[in-house]
Length: 490
Ligand SMILES: Cc1cc2nc3c(=O)[nH]c(=O)nc-3n(C[C@H](O)[C@H](O)[C@H](O)COP(=O)(O)OP(=O)(O)OC[C@H]3O[C@@H](n4cnc5c(N)ncnc54)[C@H](O)[C@@H]3O)c2cc1C
Image (tube, rainbow, N blue to C red):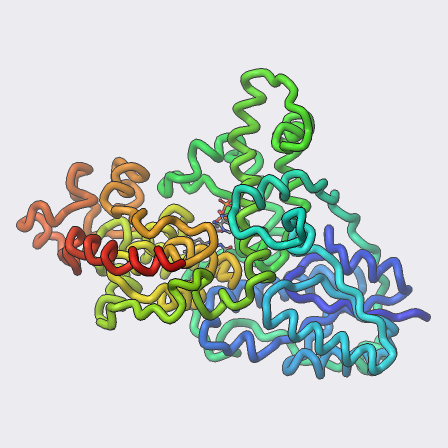
């Protein structure tokens, strides 16, 4: 009987899983494996929300596999050793994976591939994490894009593969499972020395489907108009699911494309001739097309990390490598992290993050610019705190977002673009609804003062909310003077 291994990593689902589908067609028996990798789970940037979501999703996957008669084999340790050991123990002829584009994952996979070759095993990588692979979205001369707009133009022109069918998996014989060995799946992040203090998004493919259904039903056709208003909570909340692959980008793309209508979707493709569309269709296209553009941003940052792995540790722009961000006062970082800066929109966002493991995209930009260009703290400090607290913490997207905000990255906001927290708050939270939700001290402050309670010192004192931790105008001027020479050298 032909036996192969499917090694799950960032693809924790059975439906629309390219490598699993291919594995099931190749052999009678597919042994599903996950390796708990302490190098990732106990790294300095590992956070309880992300680890808890991963474990929750693994439990859901294990239950789903049991429903098919199969079983998830869980090992803990060095993935290179564990994967090859399970493959040998069960007599697998091949290892199937979905490709990873991050530096650590690529090194790890190269080592497993080499070990497999030495042992006479095949190693098959599949493109599943993204709709368009990084090396398939490059300029005509083969070099990578570093600017989003032309990348997106090319990305849109590439035909997107449809979802693949859910595979039929056979029950694994007990003897084979015994040989595969394995450890019980830990219940929570405590197994890795982490304490979960937030109410996070539940993991698992069923929850991802529920999120997608609700988003397509209630929000996608108004996405462009509503996505920037944090109080409306009108975005998909699919980020952690896309990060861990409890849903595939193909499924998300296909569902949204269906909601727009295939004909309208062709309008997003600049290679195809534009055809006249009626008013409502054009509106639908603009609203949902903006959402598809966000999927493209996700893949842009995956591609940047793939082609320029140095961004994981240093600035993309040369002019900012070795730049010493001036602020060293730990108290300012603590105030930012704990939502006690005295800038209400920043504090509301940071409290949302602490309590839920998630933050609205508009506010991620606001708080990141505030830390770097108002407090003048190194973006890597914020990047790490985000990784520790976000349920969707993802090296490519997080690093891309931080370097964009700090103006050190590819296609970054120009150094002189500094989001003023007050004007951002007035524009995107005009009634102060979001601020009141997360900063209870300001619950009874009128809309005219909720974003700027320090304008009325007596009122501020009565709330117990802190005054601004820095003078915004003075800091802004300093940021411009500091960043300009670096940006010119970039
Ligand atoms: C400083 C900063 C840090 C960030 N860190 C992360 C992170 O660690 N993980 C992460 O998934 N996203 C990150 N983002 C991007 C974005 O904020 C989140 O993807 C989004 O808020 C998640 O909510 P949602 O799923 O409801 O998004 P939606 O608005 O519904 O978007 C749909 C999907 O598109 C992708 N996406 C949307 N915006 C972006 C973007 N700007 N860059 C890359 N992908 C995007 C996500 O996968 C998201 O789930 C960061 C942005 C900034 C500015």
